[in-house]
Image (tube, rainbow, N blue to C red; front, side, top):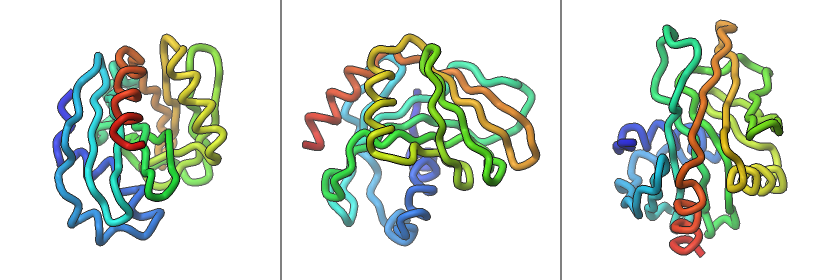
Length: 174
């Protein structure tokens, strides 16, 4: 996985818009890589609200294959200065269909995420924690969503290296 600064900015843009930090995003320094772990990578950077740590991965497969879209990412973020740990989000690479939930599946357990623009999140801290716990134990993860045009997509992610990447950001962002 090669998570370049532009992709990083795209991955954090929906968060910045939701939290009103869009001007700060333009001034955010390039993240420092903490390491690569299987199919996941860990990063950190300093923001106005303090240190931010996150892990990211890209899908191993995307269905359907012929749909044109920007790169997709799955992220887990810690922002200790804002008391945020294990925030699960995805950047899907297209605008989601308005008012349509996104389905994140780990093995056989489904979780509903809410969508805003091209991003989706769990709606509670408790759900984030539950999803991350399941990710650590799981074998496979997929994200199913619908574009604003109604095209359904399924992105399949590997969980290989996730636990090690999480441990790295847990240590870096206490």
